[in-house]
Structures are given as structure tokens and as C-alpha cells.
Amino acid sequence: MFRSVALALAVCTLAAGPSLAYADVLEWDVDAVESQGVGCRFKDTAAGPADAFLIANGTEITAIFTTLGSTFRNNRRTGQQQSGCRYRIPAVLEEGSFLSGIDQTVTYGLVKTAGVGVRIVGTTNFARRLPNGRSMPADLMKNLAFAEVVFPVDTVLNLPLANLTPQPVRVRRGQAGDNGYSRFCARNRRRAIDSVAGLQISLDKRTPDAQVSVSIDGLDVRYMVGVTLESCR
Image (cartoon, rainbow, N blue to C red; front, side):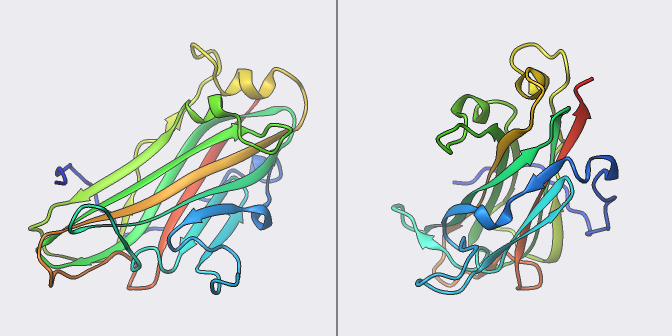
């Protein structure tokens, strides 16, 4: 059973663009994205055409999912369905800067009848990339950015467009423990890093004829992740 939580819905507005001072400091390799899940094909494959796309803009990266909000798999429990994508995007952070914060926004639409609960969860983090190509496990356990919203079963909604924007996760220089500064500034060199993110939509269907669509005007769901960079000096 889903629990009801407080939520804030906002009409989508144009946000300020990523910091121009760091526009060339972070380089995304969108062609090397790796993914698994439902509605999670970033490239054409034998299984079908791409149904997810990436847009890199300076310190921001946005994933656009065209089927994730409308294609669901049955879970083991009756009435439980899920659609989710986990993906990793390689990037290079130039020397002299460190990652000090993570912002995120899930943009979606929601049309639902009574009889179905909806839960949307976004998670993202950044990790140093090891020589073997894997993400540093210890990094993924720190400073996880988490976004969640839950819509109760008995609620009827028609939201063409809504934003879920939680408080940013900040990692400041001098913070106790292993922080962004010590991880990225200990050696003055370029850092190969990974953006590891996931977006999941879960349904709790109580009546067989309940209807739901989780997408912007029936088209797509978007997950934007932005990072704050600071100088090591």
C-alpha cells in the first residue's frame, strides 16, 4: 500500500541555464550511455527503435523517456506494476574543479482514475570511474540525490504538466568525511566520472478498469540532473 506524502506541483517554467563559467569543464559522453530496464533504450537495437534520449547542456543532463510512463511490467504481487530505467553516463571533469552539489527535476504529467495509486521515484549520484570501467562503489553510497512523490489510490487527477523538484544535495568543502572536494581535488588532474541515475514509476492497481498515464501530454517523462561545480583553489 502506498503512503501519502506532501507534494508540491508547479507549472513548468524556464529555469536559469547551467553556469556558463563551468560550461566547458564537464564533458558528457552521451554516446557511451549504458542502461537497463523498461522504456530504457537509448539506441536502436534488434529489440526495437530507441525510446529514450539524452540532451547535454553544460552542467546539466536530461533524459527523455517516451514509453516509460505508459509501459509497465507486472510485479509478483497482484495489481502491482512497474516501469523503471537505470542508466550510467560517462563524463570527464577537468582538473581544478570539484562537484559540490546535485540538483534534479522530474517533469511529468499524470492522468489517473480512482482505483490506482502511483509512485514516482528518481535517484542520482556521481562516482569516480575506475580503470576497469566500473563506478567506484563507495562514491555511490554518498550524497545520493532522491526525489519521490506518491498519489493515493482514491485520488482522481488530470495534470498535463507537473514538476517534482526536491531540495538540492550539497557537498561542501571541509564537510566531515569523504566529500566532493577530497574526492576530486586530492590530485590535480582530470577525473573520469559516471553519472548513475534511475527513474521508476510504480502502480498499485486496486480495480481492473482503473486507468493511468504518467507522461507530459501523453508524450514523455523527463529527468533533468544538474551539478554545481566549484574551484579546488
